[in-house]
Length: 248
Image (tube, rainbow, N blue to C red; front, side, top):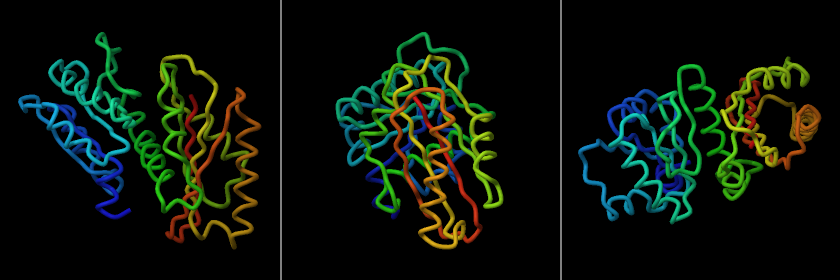
């Protein structure tokens, strides 16, 4: 994804001191996939400013601490207009406390040291899955349908080399699943696959391997989900596969 495509499709905004600090700490891991912006709590955030922030954006992330009331006012102002524009908007909240005030976002994740890497991997894989560079991509509307619910979300992400069999892959994915506090709806499942070009000998073997893996995942899930998947090929020559799962 080039710089123009990045700026026009996804953006992450650090709001307030805590949100900006978090953004600074994760910049190297996400800057290849999205444009970056910072807003301090003393800035004037009017409609024209927010409108410019959202121009050309399909997916928006906001980092903040919900205990910072001024930051939350800015987050809600941006989230409200993002919803009007049908921009998928996702909050990354640094506090573990449940928010007393309603957050005007499609989805909020509590982010901490324990889930940080997993969540960032999932975010990058979700953005890759809707890009034109993805061999088998998914539609943005499917992501919205998965994430824009009042119910909870569970997710996991792990990376494996080609010596690991599918049973062990599934076992580790299920054992490392992170679940939000709310109950799940059990409706939508997104399977994100990032495969190194050297993982299989040829395209035919790759498709067979992918099909076997998808069937294994479906056989081991608890609910009857509508499943969709993406496949992104990386030219790393490391012979590895990364898998992300997102359920609502």
